Image (cartoon, rainbow, N blue to C red; front, side):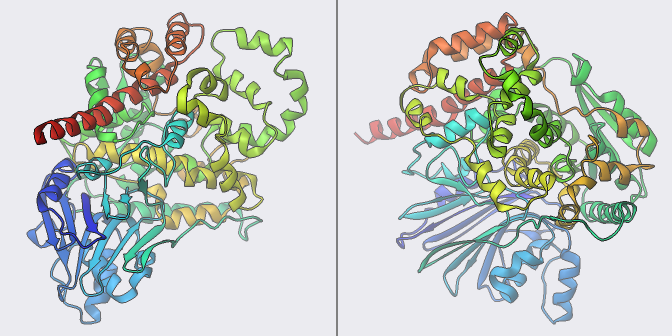
Length: 638
């Protein structure tokens, strides 16, 4: 696990090594163990290393093959590198290290652009072929590891994080109105889009080739969704799933440094911890976090029960008091773009806590999207039935007005609002929306208001729904695997863990597990309102029964309480000091009204306040600071 970056001048101009050094320095938190540069004419590659496999100097990057013709920078882990390494040794190839990076070099030599298909793991890498003058980059199938790039007629620049790219002087960093609208609708950008018009994400399962003839992007992997019944009974499929999961955890435990497990007390992390405990000779180390406010913000009891059952060496972090503003401002810097998932905060805190004991953790990300763990899936699947009563709950009905006037009832109101959408894609987009169309209309002004008039928030879901077949459950899972998972949850985990130099691995997203899960009919995943049906069956006997039957809780953060208590004054200070209003995107009166309605408990707007606060702090950190820096340069040149 590392940070990678680089530049290629498309005009033939020489790359400035000092700028490349600045890019690497901005990624040092991702790889504090070592760093390196390769600069040759119009090409420069940079690397910051977190040593996990073969921590010796032979794993130093940028790394060359024996011919010195091909050089690579790589971020991630390849879990089948030992098998691939043996194949190359059997073929007579001389390998100079024991690390997985070198294997990718020789796969590229042998298979060219097909090399990602042979990799099992999480990865983002870039290769420069000095002989053919070709640049090749690839991102893993699911999008576990990030790859951002800037491309114009002058240069290509890439990095693991946007903050490295913006170190380059004179880039066009114009903001993207569609990205701002998407952020306030869904809380994140949607690949390939980022908050900047000229900076994009390489989509999961894609590769990029840059050569004299131009730039080529290709999809090398996609999910094949089952549309009909599968041969084999449910019990047999459960056994096969458990075999695949056991093998995945075995692979994800490969490391030359200590490995632990994030344990939330939910089914996903509990199953991973149990499988890891069954494969290690010593007790596995598990890590849990909870807030002292208790309730559904604290699941330490469930995690403790699992830890006792599997005999792990368990560590708990209870968040009692800390400076939320100071941590929030730090995370705004780490996330590079406005990012509205407040769970990044406890994820960062538990990562910092775990890093004192281990260098690698296994995490339960992906279980909900692969096996059907969200309530919204059931609500969406039932919508054809309950929409028959839409006339009874129409917008102007007295019953609807009464319910909407009541305090709380957020989920009930969300369901009522879904009656207003006739199409599956628009209705599904609605479940994920934070700023509704009505709120966006109330808040947006200027160019953003103008853009909103033609903005189709459901477009991304309309496209994704059209790409897959008729199995309703698998369609929903596919859509989330392609959007919500990589753009929010995997980015959240990557940035929070790498901020402290901790590698996070996600065994439930091993591509063999994912491919098998999507070969199963949707009814195996959601059956009679039982979410994660087959995963629960696979976990039976491995984790305590109470974990399999308890209601699902996300990684909850008490933002509603914070913005009525300790963070109320801070939110008002940041959002009403005139700077947010001066951006020309939002109406001050709408912001004031939102804060007041939330403070007086007329409605829960904690999520929306968190989004606005993040956007303003991000703007100050990146946009305002960049403009000030440019101004200082201009003044110095006078």
